[in-house]
Length: 331
Image 1 (cartoon, rainbow, N blue to C red):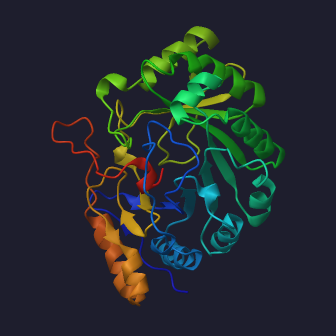
Image 2 (tube, rainbow, N blue to C red):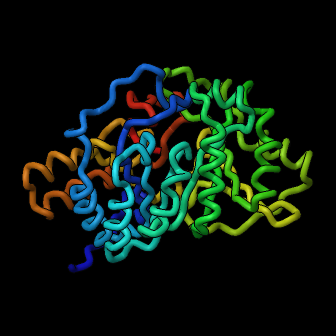
């Protein structure tokens, strides 16, 4: 298949990174993501594996080479390793990763690795069972810990922990998570609370910013030293502990990283988004199911990227939060 020109926006950002939500369904109810009572998409409205493979194949020819599978919780999607195998076989895809809450990971980690999954990010905001229950509205911390152990045993090229931080709620989780990660030689990333919660309770006063978290870490572990970026457009600013362990901070609210953003997102219902906080979507699923030509789909993708804004604008007075919550967009 012939290679196509790269996907470049009006600000010169070349897009190489795609996040694909395979479902909006989830088996927990995190406060920063979705409400307790929620109506999910009918199965027929969710992209099939074949439709995902088709659009990713086109995007790969346009320069996309990094794929991350998200949700919802992607592991609630039946036969996910089949999709992993399909995507891994697409020419040009260099990196295939998964973000999961870890609850269902233990019995499936090996199959995912054998199918071709390179890396896995596991959400773990606290090691305290009571706080975990409060945050997720489910009592399943032990399952997540089992999933982490299983992922480590499978020797993925990278196992990373993602911890969302919320002021007044997760301060006491920071140091235990840092010890947990360094002892197991797992990279840890702290992520600022973003205005994408299903209950719409987000506010600036609830943002525990990366600078505060770093100060707490350094007071215990000593000064952190800057670490080179694994990937030039990554959202995280990374550091190393004195013992060599790695920690990162994703600060979309206090320190937006939009200038280097190279990400696109496809929602579970097949809508293309040029930003996590975009107020506009491009309906690729309808084009695919209506039998649109590849040229028409390519044109829609380029239009989407061409209308990408310089930044998400959370720090602006004019910011309007998306009507969709995180689980409907894809993490």
